[in-house]
Amino acid sequence: MWIYEKKLQHPVKIERPNPRLAGIIISALGGPDGELAASMRYLNQRYTMPDSRVIGVLTDVGSEELGHMEMVASIVYQLTRNLSPDEIKAGGFDKYYVDHGAAIYPASAAGVPFNAMAIASKEDALASIHEDLAAEQKARAMYDNILRLSDDPDVNDAIKFLRQREVVHFQRFGEAMNILRDKKI
Image (cartoon, rainbow, N blue to C red; front, side):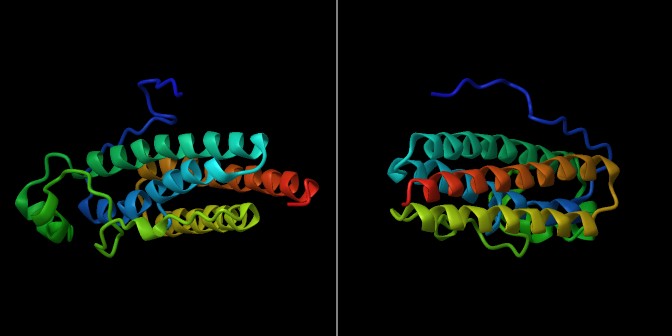
């Protein structure tokens, strides 16, 4: 059971619209290394984990990733709100806009819709935790790439927060790996 607090984990207050940047950041929601895949991966893997402490890590991190989805969606929404058709075209957001308007739709920056194939889950506990460690590093790298492409300090503040949480999640999964190794799984 979850208790939902109706506020973002970190404030998102974007002053300037930027459809080009929104088209990049959407990947953090529905791309192959995005928050949707992470949350579903961890919340599904927990059912076959052989240790309650590791189940707790997967539940905690998976739940936090749901909150990260809200942050990314807020960033994309704030970057695209109230745009004119000319701004949409000039910002390269027109292909996305034709299909979704300014609604939030999980896709990669390349325009590939989210696919459940991005969710990796095996009954083998070690295989799943190895996947989770790699997933957190790929998400960190994705956020590093976004930061290289963004010159918006408001966006960068939120992205840096998300990036740091990926580092923390990697550490938590390292702890989970040690628990499984100690159990000789």
